[in-house]
Image 1 (tube, rainbow, N blue to C red):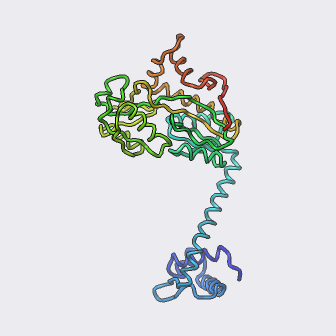
Image 2 (cartoon, rainbow, N blue to C red):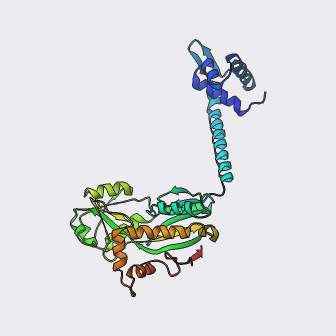
Image 3 (cartoon, helix red, strand yellow):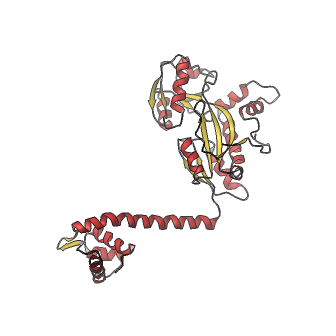
Length: 342
C-alpha cells in the first residue's frame, strides 16, 4: 500500500484520542474499518505503531518516530488548504491592497477613505515598529504599499528598485509628559527642563533610540533611558514616571500633555514606498488627506503649524506647504508627487 497524508492523519487521530474506539468516532468511521486501516499502515511501515491494552492505545517507539514526522506533514497540509482557499476567495473578490505601516493616527482615516472611494479598495493592514522590515516586505512582494517613518539621522535601508514618495519632509516630534509636570504649563518645552526626567523609548523603532540619545546629549543631558513600547510609555508618562517622544498628531488626555520641543530637535520623514508608481497612486492621495485631517484635529500640532512663520493670510496653509516636500500634495490640490527610485 502506498501511504498518503490521510493515513498519517489517522495515526495522529489515534494518538490524540488514546483509543481506537474514540478515534473512530472522531473520524466518522466504524471501529473495525479503522482497525483494518491501522493494520495496513503498520504493514506498509514494517512494524507495530501502537500497543493495545485495556487502557487504550499507546505509541510504540516506532510509532513515536512516525508521529514526530507525520504531525508536521498533516499540519502543513491543513495550512496549505487554508491559505489556498483564502487566496481563491481574495482572487474572486478582486485585487486587495496590502498595506504595511508603522504607527500613525492617520491609519483609520486612510483605510476608511480607501474603502469608500469608487471603485472601492479592499485594504489589509500589517503593522510593524520596524520601517526597514516593512520595506523588505514590499520589495519581496508581500506588501503593495508601506507607510513608514524615517528618523532623522538614521536613514532607512531602502531596497534597490523601490519607489518612494515623500508625504512630509520633516515632521517634528513632540514630548508626552504628565499633565501636572511643571514644563506642561508652557506651550513648548525645552529639553533642559526634562534633564531630571527618565525617558522611555521603543528601541524596536529603527533609529529612534540613537536619535533620542544623540539629541539629549547635544543638549548637555546624560539621559536616563528605559526600554518600552509606546503604549506603556504613555501610561507611565501620565503618572509622572517617565517622559516620552510623541508624534505631533497625538491627542492629549486629561492626565497627559503633548507639547512641542523648543527648536524642534527631533524630526522624522514620512514616506510611502511601493514597487511601482501605479501602486503608489493606489493609496497616496487618500493617505495625504487622512494625515492632514488628524493633523488639524491635534491641538498641539495645529497650534505649531499656525505659529510657524510664513507669509500670506493663511498661516496654517503656509506652514503645511513648508512642512511638506516641494512637490508633495496638499489637501485640495492635484497630486504632483515627489518620487524617487532607490
